[in-house]
Image 1 (cartoon, rainbow, N blue to C red):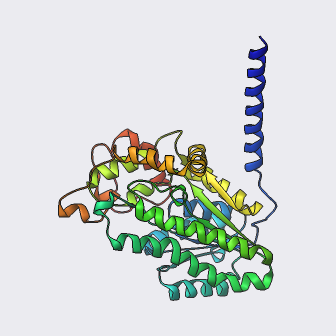
Image 2: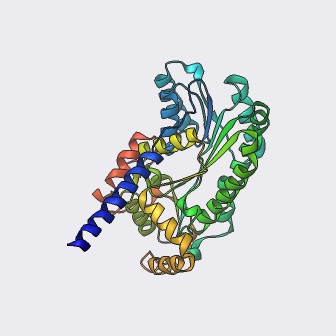
Image 3: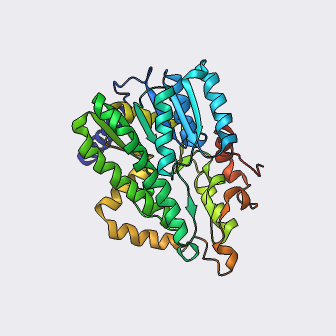
Length: 349
């Protein structure tokens, strides 16, 4: 009986600790977005668009950028209607892998909306496929988008932030920026670089009143698989990726993720890992990195094998790699998010 009571007490203590941690991690913080100028790269769809919606709802003046002008037009119109004042919204077409375009982007935002109070480096690309079918270009493109583009954006907004003695910079990295995931080598390598950049800048910029937050999401339901680049056995790769991104319990909705990101931004947190499975994997890797890699090696054996044909080295978008599995109800949750978050693009089903 005594042992049973002790077990109950232990279970109650663990439950209480988890509840307290959940309440603590969900607190809003005191940073007010009302009237702030928020710049979100990759803000025309997916998580970036959801972050923009929530910022507009709180009274922020929001600038979004992306390369696709049609997507930008749709997103910009939606945000303007939500804001009720089109002058508070700016949608600019830019290739942020080019330093000069990033500088012109920030310059125009400052001229039309004011100095950037919050920069969210959200733009990203997803490249999925076996190592044998990846090439140097895949690694270069991921690094350009996930490392060099955020660096250029940070450098462009920093002078004004330093002069004011305040600012928020949010870098959307990934669980893949803490744990290298199979069939995501180029993506993970670039996100590791972004995580290191973000942590280093936080350490040096906090003395200037600038808070840098690193966001490491696990699997999110944003509708992004349709826009992913797949290589190898394209249909099989896309089916695995799109199903994994739709599983309840393992994934988090874009709306929930955005709320947590904004709360972390207001608090000025150093890092936030999104979803319990992501936290568990990151923790396990932190304690036993070699064992984690070995386990992921076993997982790799269950993934589609490399393609030996030349076609396997070709990049194809997710929506170009559909199959019966990727169209099945197993991917239903992500299809809903794709429609909600401007991710449908060409080839919609």
